[in-house]
Image (cartoon, rainbow, N blue to C red):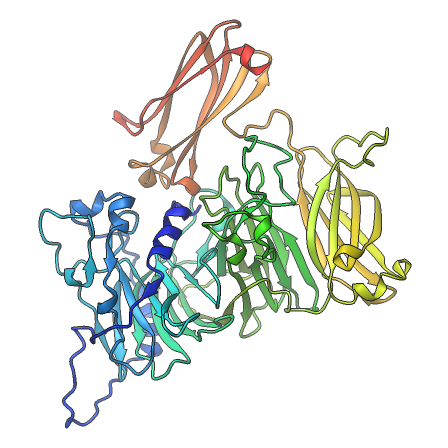
Length: 636
């Protein structure tokens, strides 16, 4: 689903290069104009990028990526991160503003060359690759790299938090991913230019990528403008970005798309984040018994939606056992975003990663987007290193080849976003067995109690007359058994408790809000829950019979990334000693850029059974041999 990229590695790189020194000289490819020469102006602008995108869409998509020199093609993470742009060679140093541009070197996972241009007086000039632009650290090459190498991406620096230092403001590297920051924030979630077929979860998601950028030389410190050309199998597109650094650093984005073929699952303004642990998801369905001192681990803790009829919906995120896709119908949506509401360090206890400083991205359309849905994809993850949350707006109407699609929106990089509306908001979401603590009452099978803390808005006013406040719950594919509402003076709000009965292995949705007579007091809390069947396959192993065990193995690396789009070419080869394979399967696992193998094995009682498996394509071996032992007594 998401191109594999260790988040700790990326954040380490960004932190290591987060401060840039102001450029001492203009980039070498920008020639100084003689003082006596009359100013000359070109004509390059966004309309030229639109023309390029239209022409590109009229030709078949070219998937060929020029091979990198072997020393870059086979480069590991440590070697790539040693290569850093020299701050004193930063671009835009000759302009009046304080924006500076640094470039990313190709290598490791970033193998698609990107052309980067600067614009001055509406004249676009490509930036040639020069080894002198980079400090290679401990990374050494046997021979010089080619002069037409290109770059992996770029980042823009600006004195956002301190006038003495240039902080990283925005970064583009890999496919169409980008991140930007407001004051006092650290990188967390990402945005994307476009997503296609993400929620289908069929291993065939497209990742359009930015082929070329044009960065305009700003004439002040208030705003910087740049353009991008996007390409992919189904669409080509032109993007204009206008970024104003500040408290929330609003980023205005204008888009014109041209389809090569109809796209039914087009994701507009897609956001990508990580949710592993939180107060609402302590792994009740427990797939891996965490030994973890940090109470919460997430870049975002909820999806916030503002509908056409002014309803505000808060959906706490979760880390499901199995991937889930949820659609929120939203005609002419007014806004949506992945938010990090919890800003308290003691809830994370991570001195290095500072989850409490991660930004929230709030998207506001510039015009009416018509009928569609906000799609929320939640993938299962076993740790915090992979992005497992994706959301985007999905138009109801498919794209039409030959017909341009124009839209625009603004992304704010804000903190908790609690000032977006004046209603009471969800502070906490907890769950527990649907029975009173300490009582003899037994919770009904497949029931769950949800506890929601609401505060803010006008709730403090009602604490002395709580009987004036009503809890309004409802459920889909589930049944509300009972509900309670009690004052919560510690948060100057109320705690709602809702007992819900679910069907086994079926996702149920629960909603609740507060009101006083006809007056709406809170946003709408929305949550999904599922009781998994006892024999469902997940995790490293699980029981599927008295003498059998299901083993799940994930393979990644090597050439598997190439085969994710051709899974029929991959075979799983299992064998067992002191047992037998009942059945086996192998499926693409795009989120790790590899494959997941599942083996149901019946073991001989009282013996250590040994299981082996590897992947191949015809006679070609694709993986190492996985080897595992199991004894039935271990399961008791």
